[in-house]
Each structure stands twice: as structure tokens, then as C-alpha cells.
Length: 359
Image (cartoon, rainbow, N blue to C red):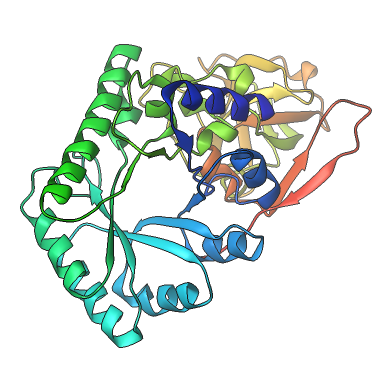
């Protein structure tokens, strides 16, 4: 984990930008402090519960990077009144109108980033959309701060090679910078140009015009990132400890006590060249067992077998054998649990790090 954090920090320093880590992956203050050590700026969250947790632990500069639901604006105003430097995002004039209305109702000058769409993958406006200036005008008239733009190139998760990943990173950067420049030409300061994801941050060659990078899954890495070439299997710092509880002698597979409630249903590697099932199996000490994966899950049971379907030598895995499962998606798997055991060398005491929960 420490190696992953340092690698991303060094990478962004070479590009001249600071990280605003997306702490939805770790959801733990000790890890967040390691992520933000020595850097300006704050963190990115995906829920108001996360914002509360990190604020209570001393982090005040927070970007809530999910399009704001109008029904949450009273809660945002309350947090800002208590001293949280909370920014919200939106991408529609109707949402901007709701924010303007709430600004007047709650006497709050909301701080807003307009979400920009770089690749048609998810939310956001195209950089040249006429609604961009309309949104800014609505917010400005209500006394809100149009702080800039943010973009997340979700299409990076479908890039097959380094060249296409670099191109996606450039598309992400260029879209955000173009949108910010349009806002400035219309009279809005737009000081913030927020870009990033772990894949694009890893492969970007030039981030000129951006002011910060958001990445989060790099803290743990996962099988999807390994499949994209972002990391190696050995870089994955998170696993689920499980135990063999039975054998399926008819097809040479194992039963373990980690089903989808422990691993999540994420199948993010299914469309990659190497399908890792519901997770890659390692020995208890973390050594990957090539081509042995979780092939299926029930609620509390996992089925372990070879990727090609050939039978395992079940005598190698007696009942009680402890194994580790590397996850497809670190965020999804971590989200199934209340915290982490930090496991170091044999002479180090294990530490329990709790995660915040809820929305």
C-alpha cells in the first residue's frame, strides 16, 4: 500500500500537480492522512457520510464528486454552516436552478464544479455544450461560486493498451481545460480544473491546464487495474482472507467461506483478456496461485477452481487451508467489510483500521 501511494505521488509530482485523493476506496482516516501527507488541498468523497467522517477527523476541504441530488442541498448547507469547505458537482440547468433556489432558502453560497463529459461514458456536459454557460449564469445570479470543472474519463477502463490510455488521458485533460476556458471567457473565474482516475493519472503524459488530479483505487490496486496494465498482480495490497470448508470431488473444486457477501458481485475482469472470475486465489502469505480463481459465488460460499475448468488436486487444499482472494474491484470488495487488518512482517503487530459506512 505504501509503495502504491508513493508511486502515484512521485508520478504526479513529475507532472506538476497535487493529488486530491478519492477516499471512497479506503474510507479510513489513517490511510487518507498517508495519501495527503505533505500535499495541499483536500480529499474527494462519494457520500455525505464520508464527508462527515473525514471532516470529524480534521479534513475540511472536501469535494463531493457525485452529481448533487436536490434533496441533499439542505444537508450540504448545514455542513457548510458548520465549517466544512464542501464543493458539489452538477451538470444540468434544472439542478443549477434547484441549487440557486436552495442558496436563497438557506442563505448559502454553494461552491460548485460543473461536471464535464470527456467520453460519453457517464455523466457530464460536453465541453462545448451551450448549457455550460447557462448553468454558470444561474448559479452566479444566486451568489453561488462557480469554482470550475471536473471530469472523470470512465472510458479509460475500456482502453486496451498504453497508447489508447494515453490518448484517453489527453482527451480528459483537453475537455476539462476547454470547458474551464469557456467559463473564464464568460466572466467566471473557474480556478479549479479537476481531472483524473487511477488509469489516466498513471498514463498521462501532460496535464497542462489542470489544477488537481483525483485518483483513489491506486492505494490498494486490484485485478481490473492489473488487467489494464496500471499495476502488477504483486502491487495489489488488499485481499479477503478465507478458509477451505469443503471439497467438490465430482469436479475438483473447493468450497470456501467467502461468497459474494465477502467479495462483492463485481465482475470487472470479465471483458478483459484474462477473466479472473470473482477473484484470484493466493496462499495465506500472499503468493498468487496462477490460474486458480473464484469461479462462482453464493451468498456466503465461494467456489474455487482452475480458470480452464480442469480439476484441482484437492489433497493440496485440505479443509481448514487458509487462502486469500485478490479482488476485481477494491472499492466494491472493501465496501463489504467494516475495516482492514494491516498485515506486515511476522514480527509486526497487526492493526485494525475501521472504515466509515453509509450515505
